[in-house]
Image 1 (cartoon, helix red, strand yellow):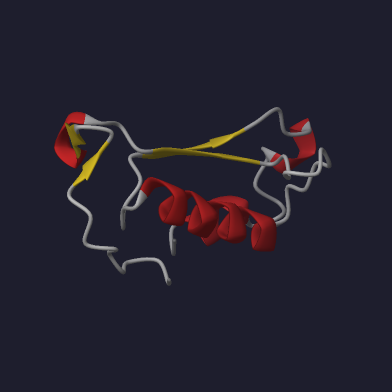
Image 2 (tube, one colour; image 1 turned 60 degrees about the horizontal axis):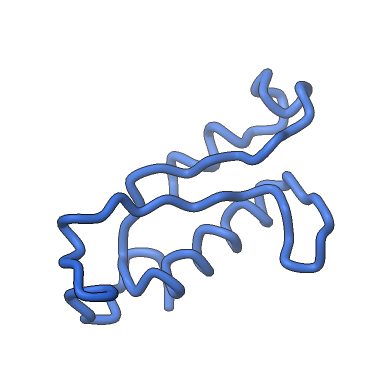
Length: 83
């Protein structure tokens, strides 16, 4: 599923989607590695959308990034605008 597509599920665990805050935690992979690349950010967001059965997120949290990723020189902020 691409970002922006909905699975059509209207509830999760008995809660309506409007009652929940949808977040994605990015930067750490399932195998325990860290990856703060823009490509990894996009993949993490897409996987979160699938797991949450939704087509939107309220927030994206970058988990414990190195400081040099926060100064904007790697393009993460610009890249995240297009998610």
